[in-house]
Image 1 (cartoon, rainbow, N blue to C red):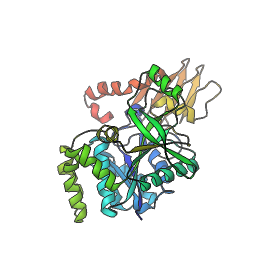
Image 2 (cartoon, rainbow, N blue to C red):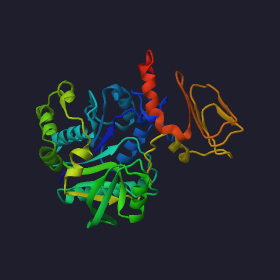
Image 3 (tube, helix red, strand yellow):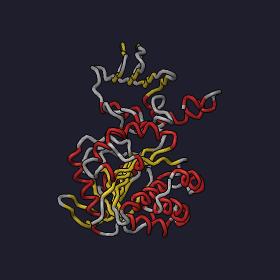
Image 4 (spheres, helix red, strand yellow):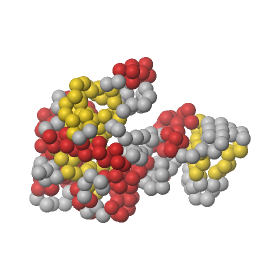
Length: 364
């Protein structure tokens, strides 16, 4: 029997949550929703699916220390927290994950999970993921969990399913017809009405041989580039020097483009659990208890004669909003953001201006 593994991808900068989110402590290391960092919440859910020795976290070099601090209560072996020296998107991370898992069990089956999603129904989540694992163990397929859409969202990719493939317990798994990129609103409405599309949440399940074969076929440059990593792991050599040498040379491409969109052995399990990727500040509101005027505050913050505001204050600093509606106000010890909720997606563009300032890097 092959072993089951969990690989959590904890990279990215979480720019839309600036100024709380920074390069060294981005969104997944913050309690954006709840009282614990999103990574800690993801690790807590993972414990129901694999033992600590079979849980890996792949992160970036600038975040490695903070990630290790969050992982400490979960008692992951030190070698299970792996830092990429530079970001090379998700295909490289998946290839690295296959090498790490393959060194432990050449026929191991592993899940790739994002670190920064909000999921409350742990029971349904665990049942769905166990079914997805079973699908990946039953045949040489790439299994994914698709989020059942609740609105015609334009910020997510979509997966179109076709006829049923296999059933695992009460969970039905379907064949995949295609992956589609983030659509315009009119197209998203058609997808929602059709009923055979789900959101692509970036949750994948596959055996090491399946991933290695797909990389060799569809992304041969990346597969060859990771050969020194596989060799170092096979010989028990330190991994960090190898990663520093080869990672900057790897192609930068997402696993969706590199593998999934080119493969004909992909299956999807529509989710039964609640899910939110909490992509920007306005998404936090629905996870908080607002006051009578719809204001959400955290820390020493208050709103007078205003409605629908999100006001967060750190460090004991009092932040007061008077006579304003639908604002985001986030105060940290060294930076403060004020913007309309409707323009929250433009924070990434704002950060380009911040970076261009003298000493701007210290605020990123």
